[in-house]
Image (cartoon, rainbow, N blue to C red):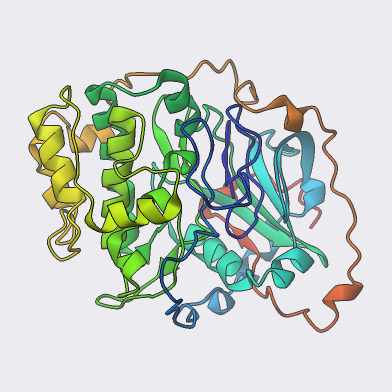
Length: 412
């Protein structure tokens, strides 16, 4: 699940879903070793430092299969309702294409996944969870799911097309950001994480590769393939994420919950301010050891408020970590004293940087290795799916705002 404009979902996520191609690098390495400064980082196959104490993944208590969309029948769409414009990303499960809806002429990013690959890689639960979570969430700084549907052999998710590029791409271009720009991005990400946590969702994959910039300069979080619903006070033991961003409690196998997202936010802020994560090492085992017990070092140019914020977010004890008692702990920190949170949410603040995009179909931030490919939706041999007909039941979805869209081209 890679990005838009640079990555809509990841270039090669743990679940193998396709992503928007980044100009910085076409695909992530299949190995989950910490990447050098210029490379993307994989989130799915992080090497385990300890024996796996993984608990069985539980089904969502309000699972996808409980959602009934029959009342939306006349509004649902098919692939024939969209004009394929460009390929903007690829992965082991399929591809992401820039598309235009034929009736209202709106452009979207259509993520196309092969069912056989998802089943073979045992990513059914993650794929369904991502679909269900995106159905539930509506927030200005989180990618929006507009439609979801399926054919015999494929799944389709139609999301907003965010074409300003990945935060990863811009960070690698510039080396590091000034504190004012970091504050602007971090405040939005904190708001998005707060919203997820209020809805009992732990994100678990925060990193520059999963943050997109929109044309207005605001951020959008994408790729929910590792997200999980957790009841209050519940913990999960699944070992997953990107090595550089793993919280100590994940490495220790003690069980983790929403505080891992605040650790990742601290790691992201540190990387935006300095150009590298705080405990980075090309040797993954040494990096894990540094995450567990290494000294948190600060460059001389960091402000005292930035150092204080990072010390709070990167507290190794999740009970003492800033944000564990609620996002207000973070919002009220001196680092964010100049943020008007209401204006930020309403996008009324001037962005410190706006990507150079000329239109809503501009793909200049996406690698030509993808955009040069002819956009097609090939047929899939479905013999291998015999007996799997109900695996993705109730995957179909239409966002409430899409109900008002014209119906002439819907085919119903």
